Length: 107
Image 1 (cartoon, rainbow, N blue to C red):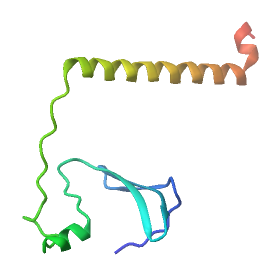
Image 2 (image 1 turned 90 degrees about the vertical axis):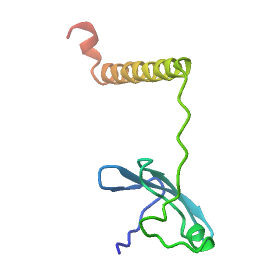
Image 3 (image 1 turned 120 degrees about the vertical axis):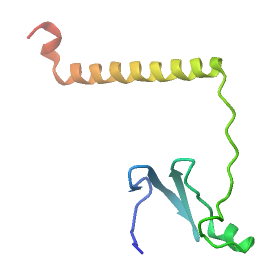
Image 4 (image 1 turned 60 degrees about the horizontal axis):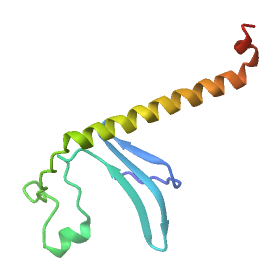
């Protein structure tokens, strides 16, 4: 078993597919975010103990299939992502121009 100390906002990568972010804590609780493929079974130990299950193969919690996203929602998501990319490019260009003011004037 590996024991690590992390600060709020730091994260751990497990393989290429799992990211665990420590967001802070209070009292005896740790607040974490887990980004992992849906095919991975992630269950708190208290739930396993509550139902008398061991963390063994075959005791996976079954997930329900997500609803399909409507074409309209897909278009909205695509528009938001494109706007975010455009904003990031503008900010990067402005930052670059601020660092090189003569570049604006052909110098």
